[in-house]
Image (cartoon, rainbow, N blue to C red; front, top):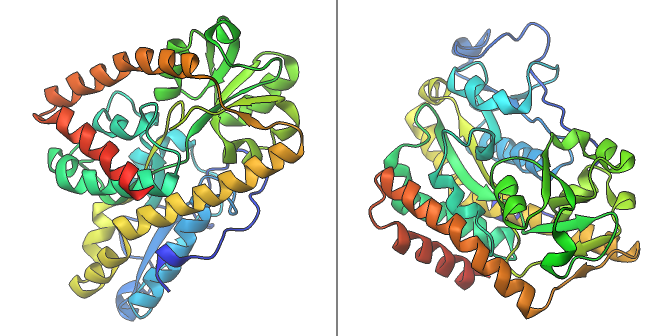
Length: 355
């Protein structure tokens, strides 16, 4: 069964971040595991720092199962099962070969990743599957050669669904409704968008969001619909605003340590490549779309429908977002992407065609 044909994912658990590390006695992964060489088998330590039923975790697990089958059992994943570090350090852990495999958020290192913000700009698309596949294609055609992921074997890049604006207090259909509203943001593009909307932003980890809402420390959130369900925030929000194409997006990657990749034989590498790239990007995107639909239905049943604002509001957000687009163009050109404007148009055209 190909990853692109996965069945719908199970209900997402209401859990915060839980970065998990290897089983007792499994310290690091740069060297082969006991018995690995004798058995002709490569065992990959696979970190999943969200609940096992979250779309990110579930697709990674299924990718591992596909790899196990495609390699005749020669490449397997070993789930990580005890705490080791925060989610923001996963990149370094994979780069340094302390972890073999993980999904990761580029926005956790904004000073390192600029090209990836292509897929995070407002109005990127209403379907995670479409934007993920378009993003993967653009990555392969234009971005990979600039080696922004140096130190990592990139298996796929992808996005979640469109970011929405949630409020605990009042509907938000004009800029006047937003000005000064205290909003929890996750950093990176969400912080930029929050400032663009003239929200009073507070950067905090997702696991602190519930407490901020309950205590009044935050009155609004920028999140995709699935995250409201995933982290048990449905009963704390009363209003939602959905911008066509989303207020923002988040760029992810499924990455492997180059040291782990080097342990895998040529034939098995070829099998893994066939299961990665666009196939994996589509699987992650589809899983996010399914989770978004489920979460939106739950919110609507609870009396929190996603309101679409009028043209004047959308036009004002579009005008303000041009500054974010221009900054990406400047950064991309400085990094060697000479045709940055064309690449951005190409990404949007791909996403629109795939919709």
